[in-house]
Image (cartoon, rainbow, N blue to C red; front, side):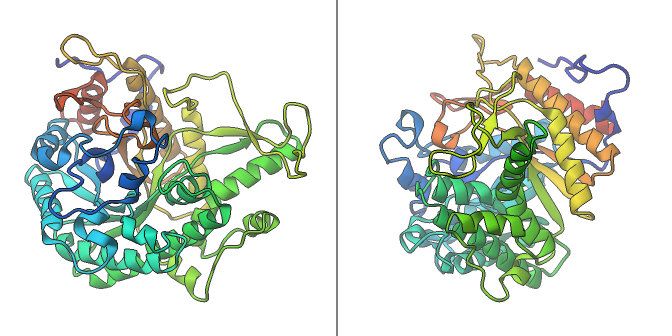
Length: 470
């Protein structure tokens, strides 16, 4: 099928997407545990996700990433898919327990060899590799030693980053240290929804600080080791946090959500300080950020690009349904207000206008920070036809409107330099197992057959149009 799908009709006049410059980067993103499989091949040792998937009830249907998309064995085919879509960048993550089993020196030759082949395959297809060093698969041995709440893990991460850079740094120009430290820290250690499944706010905040410290340490080491210009950064999942009304309670609830979800990560990296209001909120919970002398200087080591992952924005209220601003324990009410809006299969509201607002806010509050959209996409309940093709017009619409949101933010001054769709492939979607499909390429998990969806064809055609490569 070669239908031109580049102009959905939800906008009158010139399409804002057409204002994106020819130099704009276009890509797709994946992560190691979600696609690679081969969890016991060539010396790889278990990660916290291998362990978490074995906890009864932790993952939908008892699913795991043992096979996933079998990318470890099908990598050349997947790189060919990226090239056939005309994309210039592939953002992938390295599996820490594959290249450094146990999470400590030395590097494992067989594990590194896979990524060496992947980088060469990409470059041979004129696709630029964009490496993410950590996308949540902490070696289980390091979790057994305390995990991210343990300060030593930050130094182990810097060692690991240095090993990967020594192997791939001669060919890889752009490096992301961490993907979504909020998820690693809060979903993994504070709320228990992700690996390793702890439920302790103090552990979550300690993990957040040590993740950021690890980012700063790794950034310094890679900068010192580089013999040619490189781009270094990290990726944050960010969302708008707006008050449901103009009441003082709702405005304070939105402030608190923005502080814990956004500014707790943005401010130390880009300003060298933690927000005082967040410190006070945590103190009210009996929690402190374990900052030691010199930590904030390390965390604020300059970066070249901020990766922005966006999926939704939210409204927040400081009163419950009965109008109370305190819960039964006397703590301030903090709740998300559901709106009557279209939603994805993840039950996430579709609010592309919030994407524009977020990017403009980042431009205003953290001026001079180049950004790339390192993830944006949606899960829907895909229905393949008899040939396995998915006419996912809902995903086409989602991607269209969010790319327009990016273009509008650029028009308002935001320095956004690229967009990577999440995700190339349907994959293991963490605690949701294989129930949720984000891919622009369908994966038949029984046969491992890859079938580009209508959204993949739309993405290909949109890139061609914007670049003037019809």
